Image (cartoon, rainbow, N blue to C red; front, side, top):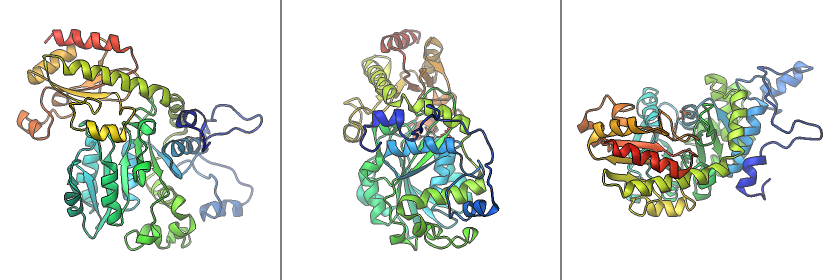
Length: 427
Ligand SMILES: *Cc1c(COP(=O)(O)O)cnc(C)c1O
């Protein structure tokens, strides 16, 4: 598969049926797997042989789909998780422990912000948030002796900032730690962070990868490039023997290419059990088969809607890195030459009243706590996800009361713009 383009990999990577085997990936709807001897099974428990014994850790359906996503991102290994939240938690917790420190972009998904700032803080893991536009100097100043990872989102949900991946990777590597990038919004069709220096890539597959609003899920992809043993003092979990597997040292036994995902499976899936169901993995794969066809259409619609809104007198401001007026246009041109995604956010004159009237007036676009779906949907953070905040607090957080986040689906852009125009007339 390696020599094919990403378009072909979306359709066929990860699963190559043999003679007479099913054309579509089989859903292995089984919790467990049968063995002839306990010696055979013992080898699996010791990580001496690869194979399946219990679906809380691994399942063949999941592995076909994970292998496809690894191929799309240009990684060496991947694992599916039950949600995007689980993916980001596992990616960080696989190398952080009580007493560790994380450097993270402040412009990230609210759920991930809370995971790092509140829940992981309770585990004794500290964080320093940095602006996505931080200078090299500011970035370097955020590191401490106990820093173990740097985290950011290629295109942040919902701020739509674009991460300078090369700059963040350089800072991470000069401090001997990996860069983890959540690549949910662009998907590997529009950006492959590993090509720009990221070491680990995560996704909420719930979004464009599934793309039909059908199955919650996540994935972690390892680039296989980070040299854990060269920084063994920082990563004892990967570089010293694991007593629960007869003293295996992951980075020695599985190398740079396999250590990270093997440890996440053997320890984190074993203990936290956040695996994706094989049924959901099958649905995810149906989405992946058309990802390369859908993403250009999401971008086309997002760009058209952003350009229309920018010219409208009732709109104060539009955030979309495909617009020349956007502060992230230059970074977008570098990292997202084919466009980013279909999510656009804009501020209406007249605050939350105007936003509520506008959203009531929409016929095609639905009000949903979701993005990156075939059907266009939108949300006013001030009256939904951020409704506990006052206007002042909202302004401080950079979320004006009149802000609407619109995720442009796969409908015809003419119909979408007509729907938006009609709703704007109702304000
Ligand atoms: C939605 C989202 C998540 C969380 O994913 P779930 O599948 O909802 O758990 C994480 N990161 C980003 C960028 C997201 O958009």
